[in-house]
Image 1 (tube, rainbow, N blue to C red):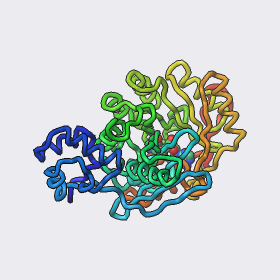
Image 2 (image 1 turned 120 degrees about the horizontal axis):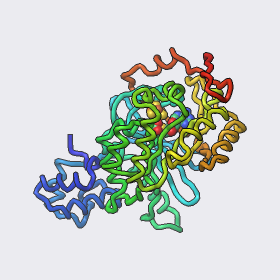
Image 3 (image 1 turned 30 degrees about the vertical axis):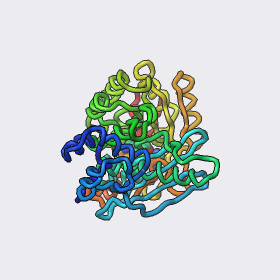
Length: 386
Ligand code: SAH
Ligand code: SF4
C-alpha cells in the first residue's frame, strides 16, 4: 500500500523526502500543502518541484478516513463517524464555542482499559489507530469546516476553525503512544496546524510510565481521569488503577508539571449517582490533592448509555460535591453536556468495534458496587450490590 503522508510529523516527512533524494525544504512545502491547505492531490501543489511530484505520484498518498456519517446537534456540536477498515469505525466530535472550536479526537478503535461508566470501554478493543488515522480526524474537520465557513460571505477560508484538540474520543491515548506522539507533533507544528501546547490536551486514565515519557517527548496539557479519591473505589471504576495506584499517579502528575505548558493538571471526575458522588468522598478528594498536586477539578455529569446500569448524579449532588472542593480552594468546573442528542457527549462514543477482548460480557457479569461512607472517620467502606 502507498505510504500515507498523514503518518509523518515534519521530521518523519523530511526523512521520507530524503529517502527519495529530496531536500528538507521540500518536505516543509509538502507538509504545508497537506496540513495548511488541506490538499491531497500532488498535481495541485503548484510550487512543488515537478520531479518530487512525479516521485510521490506512485509511492505515496494523503489518505484521509472515509466518512460514514455526520450528525449535527441542535447545539452546533458535530459528530463524524469514520471507517478505519476491518469492520471498525471511530468517532470525532467538533464542539463550537463562542470564542473557539474544540475537536475531540479518537486514538484507538475501542479501548482496552474497560472503565465501567464508559461506552467505549464496553465496546472492548480492536486496534490502535495509526498516526495518520489520528491526524486525519483533524485534517478532515479543519478543512471541511473551513470550506463551510468560506461559503459565508463574511469570512475568508484560511482562518483556523479548530483551535483546541482534546484526545478524549475513543481510546486510551497513552496506550497508543508510538502513534500518538507524531500526531501531537503535527498538531503543534507551525508548518501544520500550529496549535499551542496549552490547547492540545491528552486525557488519560492514568498510565504512570507513559505520563513520564510524554513529559520528555511532547509535553502538552494533561487531563487525568481520576473519578475516585481512594484506590478501593478507583480500582473498580478504572481497572488499570490496580497496577500503579493513586499515589504513584499523583506523583507522576507532579513530575509532569515541571515541563508542562500549564501549571496545573486537570482531574476529570465522572459523577455517578451513589457511587462516587458523596460529600464525604469530596472531602477525601480534597485531602488527597490539596497542597500536593496543583490541579483543577472538572466534574463530568455521567452520560448514561443503556448497558452501563449506572445513573447520573443529580444536579444537587454535583453542586454539593463542587462546593466542598471550592470551599477548600480547589478550582472546580462542571462540564456542560454538549451534543447528547446525537450521542456525542463524553463517554457516549461507541463507533463500531470488532471487540477482541469480550469486554462487554465481562463487565455485565460484574456490576459496579454502590459505595457509601457510613461515617466520616476511618470506618471501612460499606458496600452493597448495585
Ligand atoms: N481514555 C481517556 C480519554 C477518553 S475518555 C481517558 O479515560 O481519560 C474522555 C473522558 O470522558 C474521560 O475523563 C472519561 O472518564 C470520561 N467519560 C467516559 N465515559 C463517560 C460517561 N459515560 N459520562 C461522562 N464522562 C465519561
Ligand atoms: Fe478507555 Fe477512557 Fe473509556 Fe476508560 S474512560 S474505557 S480509558 S476511553
